Image (cartoon, rainbow, N blue to C red; front, side):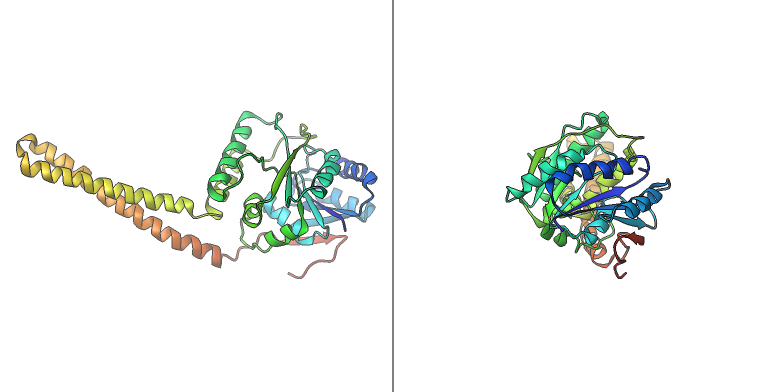
Amino acid sequence: MDLSIIIPVYQSEPCLTILVERIHQALQPEMISFEIILVNDGSSDGSWNIISQLCALHPDVVGINHRRNFGQDNAIMSGLRLARGTLIVTMDDDLQHDPNDLPRLLAAIRTSDADVIFGASPFDHDPLWKRLGRQLHSRTLEWLLNKPRHLQFTSYRIMRAPVAKDIIFYEGAFPFIDALLVQVTTRFEQIPVNMHARLHGRSNYTLFKSLQLWMKLLVSFSIRPLRIVTFTGILAFVVGMIAASIVIVQKLFWPETFAPFEAGWASLIVVMLIMNGMQMCFIGILGEYVGRTYVLVSQRPQAVIAKILNRPMPPQ
C-alpha cells in the first residue's frame, strides 16, 4: 500500500460522500494504491451510515466506529494503528483541507528528507479567537517541546510510516499528535496549501473545547509547568527571607523607625511570603512525582472500537 489517508469524522454526514469522491479524483492520475480510513468518533448524526455505504461501494475505504466520542487525536491514533501505507496523510472531514493538494504533499515528501510535511495555510476563514488560539498552541509547543518556530503545525500533514509506528506506541489516554511527532523526529517541513470554508455547518471546536485541548498539551507531555511552580515557590521563599532579614536588622539598629502597627504588619507579610513560598515549593515537588506516576500507571483507553468495515477487527 502506497498511501493511507486518515480522516477523523464527527458530525459530518453531508460532507463524506463528496470528500471521498474528491480524494479519488485527486489521486487517480497518481497511479498509486491507497486507502481512505474514516474514523467515526461517536457522531450522533448519520455519519456512520454514510461510512458504511461508502465502504460497500469502495473496497479502498475502511470504516472505524468508536463507541463514543474520544477526540480528534484519539481518532487519528485509531487510524494510524490500522494504516498500511508507506506514507500516511491526516486531514479533516469538512473539506476545509483541499483533496487536490494531496498530489503536492506526495511530491514534496518524495523529494525531501523530511519525516513529516505540513500543509500550511493562512486560516482566513476562521474567527479571530481561533487564529489567536493557534498562535498560543504554536508558542506552547515551542516552549514545552522545542518546536521549530518557523513551522506551522496543522492537521493536514503527510508522514512516513516509521514515524507513525513510533508514535502509536504511546498508550496514554490523552494523545496529542503534534507533541508526539516532536518527540520522535526533528525533520519537519511545510508547503503552502489551499484552505476553504467548511462545506457544511460550523466547527465542533468551541472556545471551551479549544482551551481543554490546550490544557491537555500543557500538562500531558512535559513537566515544565510543574517546575515553574517549584521555582516560583523557591523565589517567593528567597524574597521572604530577604524581607525578614531587612525587618530584623532595621528593628535591631533603627527601632525608632518602626511604629508598633508597622512592625506587626511587616512581620505578617514576611511570614505569609515564607510559608506560601514553602507550600508552593512542596506542591511542585509532589506534583513532579504525581505527574510521572500518573503517566506510568494510567490505564484509561485511548478509544474503544465497536466495529471495523473492510478490515479485520484487531485483537483487543
